[in-house]
Length: 509
Ligand SMILES: Cc1cc2nc3c(=O)[nH]c(=O)nc-3n(C[C@H](O)[C@H](O)[C@H](O)COP(=O)(O)OP(=O)(O)OC[C@H]3O[C@@H](n4cnc5c(N)ncnc54)[C@H](O)[C@@H]3O)c2cc1C
Image 1 (tube, helix red, strand yellow):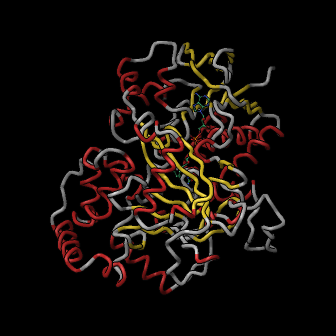
Image 2 (cartoon, protein in one colour; image 1 turned 135 degrees about the vertical axis):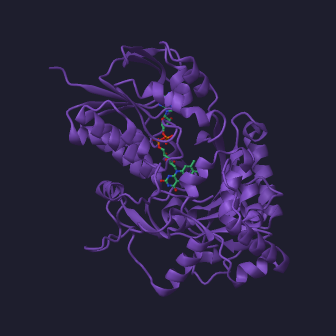
């Protein structure tokens, strides 16, 4: 009997996990089709003149032991709990354990993240604002908004209107390009459900009393996670290694093969078509299973068979937020380390900094030196990432690279983070569809699910593949669940949709 095959669309964390799991647990041959020339999707690492960029900064952390163990099987821990330490200077395939620090830059000052009303923050906020925060928080406790119709309602109920106005309203609008009042509260439910003022204070108290050194922080809200794993050369290293293993074990990972259409018959995908990089040569493939991580909007648009009108309309109305980052190599930063955390060259100790200032467009700043010193070719220099949330084709997106660098450097200079004279080199990266939005037609997503769940041999997994705000671990868990279903011959997909829909995963901001 001919060997069964699974066509996997996309070589990001979800697609590669599915391929790896199929090889480990079945006789099915995975054929991964990747549209670009890069492994890792959003979780890739981009190399520029020996310096590495992690798009967005990827903490490797999961509340799932399955995922934590999976990562450690692919790459050994630098500091295993029950063995000798591995020297990062001598070993390349290595997971470092990193300490997290991310703060908020607001009013040209640093605030703890998540917001912590300690003496320093109170001083920075000023008495008038503090009193307003206190009163509005009490008001939210006494008389909460009864039906949370938007993210705005969700946040006001948990933090009070004043704290919402100060720290959430403008930043969230920067991220999504839409006001919180237009965003579905489900986003808050998935990302910050477990976080509240009382939990943040409780966490701070616990921290003072006890120092937990393990990397498992299952009972900690994701926003408060303080240690995480990180591949020595950035997240892409993990996925390049998985792709290597998939190929070594008999799977295929084909680059520059963009899936453009699918044909259905009797509730099954019977074939799909992929274009090569030139966009001309068409490759038609048949497989027993199709596992898709491509954006749902593109997938439905590419189905060359009858699709219910409502599902097609909802898919067309799905919205994505896109992302631009500029890598800046600098002699030094203007802001100095004013914490008691020791750093080389007086560099601020943060992994990333939320830029809350409303007079600039920049959303976040990554300090790559602090993610892994091995991301930086010359450790004497500061290597940072300036992150902008935008829409593909908007003014920012279309700006020529040189202009964008001048604009971004001007913003950092304006808020006192760099002196432009220290800028040695820079690079611009545009990444489309980084954030599947929880507005547009998202509230009718069930129409799409009703249609796609019935296609027996099609499995939607991952982040854009499910139009879900999934992190790597959630994306991987959906891939593992798809393989479970294939093995069990299950045609229902409910277990895939349950991943990241429950209490145990929260992220803030
Ligand atoms: C700013 C930012 C910060 C993040 N931080 C973290 C973090 O700290 N920790 C964490 O765990 N996660 C984080 N994430 C989430 C993480 O990046 C995603 O969960 C993960 O990359 C999703 O994996 P995926 O395989 O589903 O999708 P992707 O990574 O998007 O990969 C999909 C792949 O499919 C390919 N593709 C698309 N269309 C086609 C087509 N038609 N044909 C063939 N191939 C196609 C794409 O080119 C891509 O390579 C962050 C994301 C962002 C944007």
